[in-house]
Length: 120
Image (tube, rainbow, N blue to C red; front, side, top):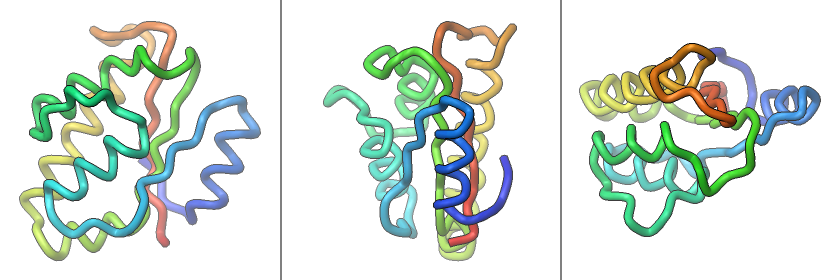
């Protein structure tokens, strides 16, 4: 996970042929953060709004086109300050999903997930 501003991260993603997905707003609790991630990545209606369901959807992404999908999470520091346990839990799920979809990962397919934390 890298840090820079959202616009630059999105431009970098597009330049390499990836799809950029921005987490809207600056959610400050676990549920609203998961919902913002779900919205950014167009999760299906069956998303269960818990950490296991977040992981399952992040490592599926079958409703999105093949290729790299960059999830840009701006303002993650706000959640980290407001609810450090929720931040660590969500950040852990995001990291696990990145690894699972990486080449050689246990859920690798035609889609790859990259998570970028922006400073804005």
